[in-house]
Length: 245
Image (cartoon, rainbow, N blue to C red; front, side, top):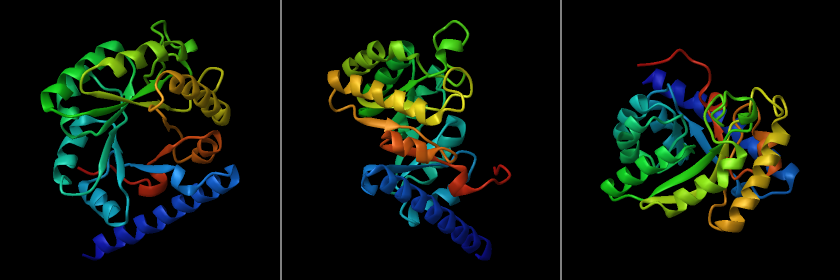
């Protein structure tokens, strides 16, 4: 029990620091704190941590590997959590992901839209979808996608239209990861501002798709300043620990 209490204290302290950062970033940007939702990225951490976080008031958690996420989500099925899938998603994992994820933030190709739609209909669920935008796609190898997945900015409108028309899917908005290469490398604020411009264009065609997921432990302030509605924070909450499991 001592170890569990110690972990709870550690997570509570880290969570409070992140909350302070988000609140300060909102104040600096002239935004309300409630306009920004914290998603805690719990990848590589055990279900016990997810349970502690839920007890501390966290309501949104994210995973990036189905083989880790599926058993964790099952173990935490009694908790009032919204599960986000944020990793690159192969079509052979879609059936499993659709069974627990409330939102998939990494939609980046037509084939994935088709697979997600089919499985959402099978599961009789409505699945929220974000188009992952690759702001480094102009330097990616040939296929118009980024190093860490995502569709090039020029492909957003077409892919969004596919999601909006697909049975079982709901187009919620856009997601990006600050690129490590290309024109936006080291320019997180500019990258996130570009994403906001793309969001404005998307909302002209799909007014309800107003979610903008951007910013992580190292750059959440820049994301909030740009206008992100959701930030995805892992290390700053959970710390750097050896992988469990």
